[in-house]
Length: 306
Image 1 (tube, rainbow, N blue to C red):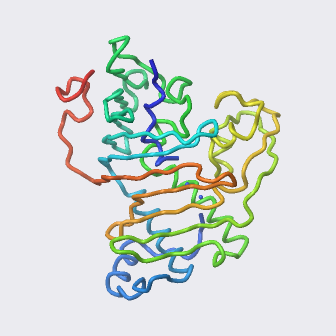
Image 2: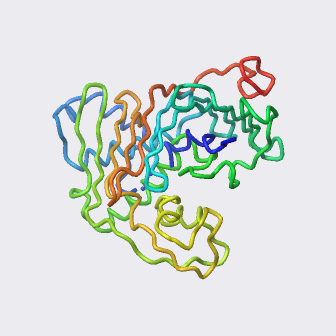
C-alpha cells in the first residue's frame, strides 16, 4: 500500500523567496492598477512593476480564507520527475483540509481529512483499498512525508510565498533586482520570471534545536533539496545538531509564476535548479473564499469514502 500520494497538494504548490521594499497598501494598489491599466499594458515591464505585482501577489495569498483546487504536479524525486494529481478544499485558519489523490489513470487512490486540533492532530486517511480501514497518521510523519517535497500542513501556497519573500529580501540587499525579475503581460495572466544567476551551494552547520524544516524555512530553500544534496541524510528526520549540510543559496536557479490578473493568484509555478526542472504545480481550478457546506470537513460526509 502506498501512502505517499497524500501530499500532492502541498505545495505547495507546493512548497517559494522576497523583499521588503516600499510597500503599497493592498486597496491603494488595486485602485492604482485598475485606474491606470496602461501600467502593465506592454508585453514586458520593468522590474519595479514586477516587484509590485509580486508583493501584491503575496498579499492576495495571505488574504485567502479558503480554496477549492484541482492540481497537477511534477516533483523530482531520486532524479525522476513524478506526476501527481490531487483535488481538495482547504481552510487556512484554523487549518482544515480535505483532499483526494489520484493515480496516473485518474483512479482515486486515497482521501485525507485533517482538522487542526482534532483527532490528536492526526490526519484521517482512507486508503480506498487494502487494508480497507481508515488510518490516523501524523501529517508531518515519515509515512505521509515520504517522497514528497512538502507536508500536508504546507499546502495552499503560503509556504511558497514565505520562501519567495526571503529571497526578495536578499535581492534587495544585493541591489540587483533589475537583473533578477522579469514580467510579461499575457491574456488574462502575468508571467513573472525570477532568475538567480548566482545560484549555487553553501555549507550550513545545523544548530541545536533545528531540524530539516526549520533550516529550510530559515534559509528560504527547499527541504527536499537538502535531502537530495546530502548523502548522509536518508530522510527529512535524519538531521542532527552540529551536522554540516550542503544547502542551496536560493530557492531555485529560476522560478516561473503565472498569475491570474484579476486576483494575482499563482495558477502555475515552475522551479528550476542547476539540474533542470525541480518541481511544477499547475492548477486547473483554484476557487477562493467560498461559502462551504457545513459537512465539508466532516468524515461522515456521504460524498467521502471514510
